[in-house]
Image (cartoon, rainbow, N blue to C red; front, top):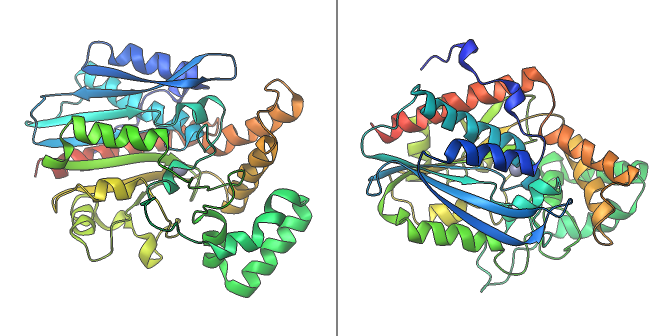
Length: 364
Ligand SMILES: [Zn+2]
């Protein structure tokens, strides 16, 4: 499925904020399919109303569905929205048609509050990708995080780096990354917090699965993320168990490019409470869920920009126009959606490639 370079949408099509992302998505989606609005009570930094949107394209009764989601981690939805817009534009241009008996469900900005405020977490401080645990049971423990937490948010960057370095020396790099980013359920002001109950977006996902009867269809789910891994590379991360039918399906569709956190082949470490798990639970053996993760800068930089954002928000909502706020938010935008043509072309090219593989897989 070659993708001519000249056919890749303009990198200028990447939105700079929530309002632009939503407006462009709605314009493209208007006449294409069945669109629904999922409004939030909270507002954006300029008082704007916030919503996720879901768009169903293709036959209602299709037995196969491509599910393409953006903005699980709010700020990452700027690039995710651009990918979704690119797909809609291709359909409008007649450059791409869904295979027979195949539909597409797009979830645009699953965490619109995070997109608007340039944060990873939602309005409750919850990292949605740690929130899909069974809250009827004891929550996962992360003793590494508990050991590091005071230093993470309180210390100067130098002291923090020394502390993280000491932890890494003692326990290894993977243990350090799990301690920070594996998920924690004890510190609502901290990063990678999974919450104490299902988040609003958790309910939205389960509602969409129910209302569209997705448990009875073959699914190719792609959740779009940015900020982890090599610059511009779109890693296909599979969090199905290594010997499961889901991993076998992912390998069949996406080939040797598939990476598995569970076996250490991914930029991502194993994590608690992933959105993946809600979908794994309803999927049959011919379906799979992958995260398409576009890298940007180093993982240590990722941790630094997120920690700075949590330090900014730890005493409540900051003054959006304050210079210190602008600096932190600019760093967030730069890490999760770099303003560089090279990066954006890589994202669009790879997204087209992976979506093409998913559609081929679904129709084989
Ligand atoms: Zn992410």
